[in-house]
Amino acid sequence: DLMFGMGENHGQVIESSWDAAVKSSGADTLPNQESGQKLSSDLSEIEPKFVASGHGFCITIVG
Image 1 (cartoon, rainbow, N blue to C red):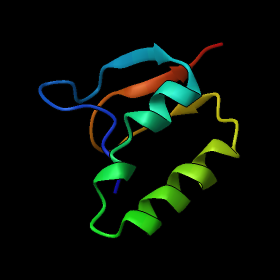
Image 2: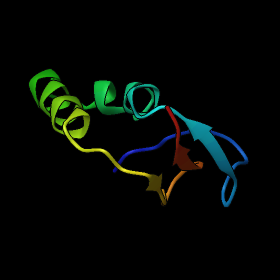
Image 3: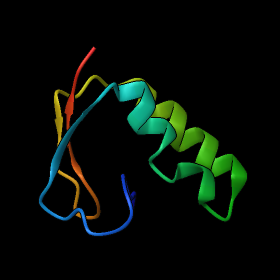
């Protein structure tokens, strides 16, 4: 379960590069460091245009 932002941001849409979104995804906070690194690596391999997050901002990918 990734969180692309904290606070009162449900339903808001921001613009971000995918690289910046992956870095702020929370993957590095997983209890197992190896799993977090694999998740970040796997996410870096895809090229979404929009992320509809269940927690945090929705993200229009730019750049």
